Length: 247
Image (cartoon, rainbow, N blue to C red; front, side, top):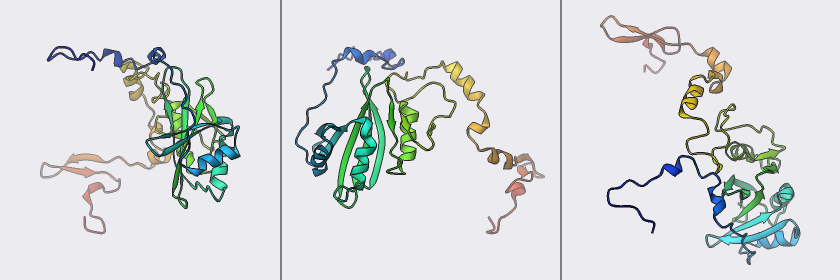
């Protein structure tokens, strides 16, 4: 166990503020796990159908089959898993990504479920940091739309052929990068003063549709006859009028 210092001392976490950056490069690089006998028959079928497209497979957490495939054939292989009756992975539970840092590839992860066959399969594609592009699978599962946008937003992976590839969690004009990357500083790339300045100068249209802004009628608060406060103005609910339910 690491030395925690003398009793009552405060651990030094100052190194955390700048984020992990490239410090992981000093750690030994993990070798890709060797292929193992699969528990899911879909893995065996993939090896037979795509001998050049399947790179390796492994089993994690005791019974979770994971298949690494060629990123250039992702739509071909996942489309086959979706369309073949004896596979029929009809539900895309998740699309996410993993960044291990240290310059290692970013893994794009597809969690598949076959509801009729009650089977789960995890498929991964490794992308080098200088080639973070992969084909979209929205043509196979329409539910991949927002999931791929999240990976694009937080990891910087571009999905070719996506119908509406733009940020989904961060503002469109967010300039600090991709927050779930290992090289992203914990406090952001800008100073606190710059972050505050940008927040205070945000255009309302970054958060509201123009129609919502135009239709909004401000409600003014004035003093009532009894010295209390009452809502005055012409907006919905102004003046304290009762609605049809008497509320």
